[in-house]
Length: 353
Ligand code: PMP
Image 1 (cartoon, rainbow, N blue to C red):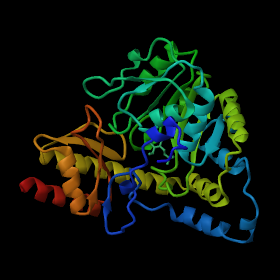
Image 2: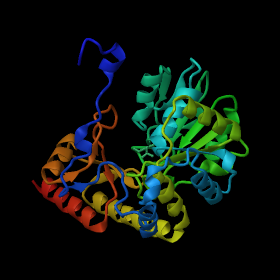
Image 3: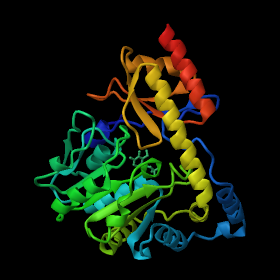
Image 4: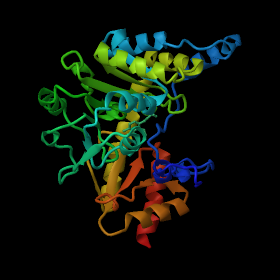
């Protein structure tokens, strides 16, 4: 802290360094990464990029990648925007599309970056409580607003809204930008991309960090009406934001070409999730229904912060949020079968104590 810091900077909470530990022996189930590596074809494509061309700047428009995304999702290239991770895509959306002086609406239990971006860009917001079963109630998103955003499936709860509910929300919110953040959609949700042609105020964001195992490459994208996409391009250019680098563009394109590997990992995570839910339930956890690559659960007797600390002692890292209403929950990323077995054995020992 220094006297040169503005009150805003003083209020910023640093990212908990413990969430990305440097030790390798840990069972790391705290940041919703994919437990399986990227497709071998992606790795080969990146290797293929490691040559003399690295001295050249990358394609500033990521044309091949936009074409791959457009093709995969059955939309036009003009409906696709790409960024360095969906966090960057979201940053541009907040900065450029939610600046109306009216409150942005999002759930009170949701992705923690939304209020951070609001603080960064001076956007007023209103956090709408989830209902008693931790679900988003679309009927609550009414009144004066400068935009609406939520993840579907939501994070950290894992619960998802059916497409019909998203449609219902869009029918009554035609005058404001609505963003559906689909970081986890491939693990059980339904994408709203099929609605972008009908609703010119809809932006759907996705990431290659989760279902495509490429968190380290930093690739995310938005799909929406060409006018919204053009707005994002202008915002990005005016900040002179970095284009995706050569390795990211090449690897991401290759990922969309390897559907078989994608589905294999997707199915493995989903079936492991089912197993983990059963095992946690048997250990007296209440597990919220999850359509994501993590589960959100609370134990019937034990304090969540203490459980997280005990697990960490055992080398197993899960996520605990010190936030009202969810402080008794743990968010656990679905790992490989052997990682989940380590987690369960550790939990069993802790609970037997
Ligand atoms: N949205 C949600 C809901 C997330 O949980 C995350 C990952 N933490 C992101 C967006 C950002 O993902 P990335 O920047 O890796 O694409």
